[in-house]
Image 1 (cartoon, rainbow, N blue to C red):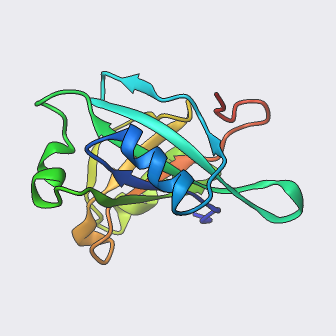
Image 2 (cartoon, rainbow, N blue to C red):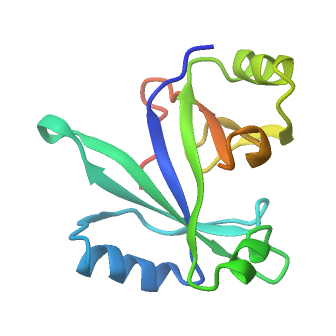
Length: 149
C-alpha cells in the first residue's frame, strides 16, 4: 500500500454554522462548500478548503454535525461538548488493496467500505490500532471525480 496525501481533518461540531463563523473570523478561511446531509451516516457535512501552494487548495477541514439523536458522533460530542478533532483522512490509490493490507496487519476496520462525502470509497480504522487516532482511508478521486460544491 502507498499512503497518499492528507485529504482532510474531520472536526465534530455541535453547530456547523458556529464553526463556519469561527474558521472565517478567527482563522481567515474564505472557501466554504455548501453543507449537505448524509442521512445514511447520520451527519451533516461542510468542507472548508485551506490554501495550498501556487494557488491550489490544500488539505480540507470537514465539519461534521449530527443530524439527530441517533448520529454516531453524538458519543464524541457528549465527551467533547465544544467539538474537536474527530478523525484524519488519508488518500490511497486502491481502496480494496489498502483494506486488505490493513486487515492483513490485524487492524480493525470499522464497518464496510462505503461511499464517503467526496463520492469515493472509504473505510475507517479503529483508533486503538492507529496510535489513538480514528483514521479514514479514502480512495484518491479519479480525474473529474473530486467532490466540490
